[in-house]
Amino acid sequence: MDISPILDGFGVVLEPTNLLYCLIGVIIGMLIGVLPGLGPGATIAILLPITYGIGPVSAIIMLAGIFYGAQYGGTITSVLLRLPGEASSVVTVFDGFALAKQGKAGTALGIAAIGSFVGGTVSIIGLTLVAPVVAGFALDFGPPEYAALGILGVLLISSIGNGNKLKAIIAACVGLLIATVGRDTFTGAERFTFGSLNLAEGIDFIPIAMGLFGLSEILYNLEERHNKVHSPAKVGNVWPSRKDLGQAGGAIGRGSLIGFVLGVLPGGGAVLSSLAAYALEKRRAKQPERFGQGAVEGVAAPETANNAAATSSFIPLLTLGIPANATMALMFGALLIQGIQPGPQLVTEHPDVFWGVINSMYIGNILLLIMSIPMVGVFVRILRVRPAIMAPITVLITLLGAYTVRNQVYDIFLVIVFGVLGYLMKKFGFEPGPLVLAFVLGSMIESSARQGLLIYGGDPTGFLTRPISGTIFAVILVVAAWPLIRKAIRRKTSDDRVEEKTK
Image (tube, rainbow, N blue to C red; front, side, top):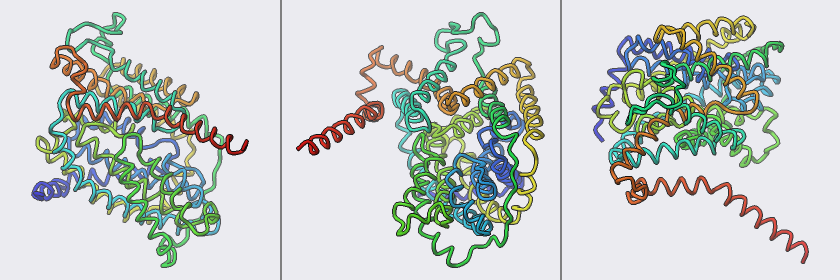
């Protein structure tokens, strides 16, 4: 393995400008993680317009810092207020808040900081080793393979994501429909424009992202939480004892592995990783009843896993051009805004971006470890600011940001429309993630599928004759049929039990 590009990547990161943006990113990420409801997805969506005036490397380094920085920020509210700032920190509430009630809030936050650092670092090393290999393999991909990958990505994020699976699939279908609005790139025909010149150019990614993730989250969380008053727990010594570190060591190691593997999978991500890591620790514990009562492992495992997953989710994005989750879909959009196409060619065409972003995570994790413990007091003060004060300021910034992209009032209108849509989706149990992911992948699926059909003279069976695309379509078939297969297995097992009882 040639390490010269990796060393050049460190040279890129250590440039003063990029170091500054890395610091800004992790600080914003931690602050956003502390504020319940306004997660990294919403923040990245709101800040997308700012990236227009920043260089590609600096912009992506900052946005990446926001993403993995928010994973630790969400821990603080989980421990001190029993209020997860991030969905991936929900599991941390069980034992983190229990430790805080025992006067061990500092211990919980210290263990979380160490676990986050270890999990993130292990995952970055894995990313450094695995990403170039995946990118090299992906060079054999053509239009049929990209079409198959795009379909698989939408299907996985719909079927593996949290909540009602049918609602997730409906949201993904809506995203695919929105992606078709505008002029057909092959024929020039207008589709679903209703005579509007604005719609003829298609719907831009930024208003959708800022509406669904920014404005809708603000509206929803303002309604849910504006009447709730919380008093943060007191924080004592934040450095864990040797006994606590001994108990947490195994959980941190296992959480790193689980987070890295599940973070790579489309639909996996930080939430699923934290749940899986916590469940594993509880299952293998000699005294599982300790979990929920203040078990150190119950904090270490999910916090390590969600940070590892946040890092490894960059693998499919940078190497295949496939976002593994909704936040990665926003990162995908940020790269496109900079004129950079994520995918196999990224390593060779833009090595400064590829290795600069990866290596910035080493620096970012060190900054998080250094800042997370001393800044706890600052975060506690921020938690006392009422949402009714923060929300109007954030809405104003969101709308101004949308306007500054193209200086069109129409974009503000789109943000409001998608903000209301996102709010209604959350009210009725629809997650916006599948919609955004499907919208991002929709254009790639359509163009790749049509190019593939042109290659094979309109014969769709040609997609199945290529080894890679044929294998991917086989996986798609298994994923699509799996719910029916699982249901049939359960019914067979139930029938067998009934027969045994009757005998």
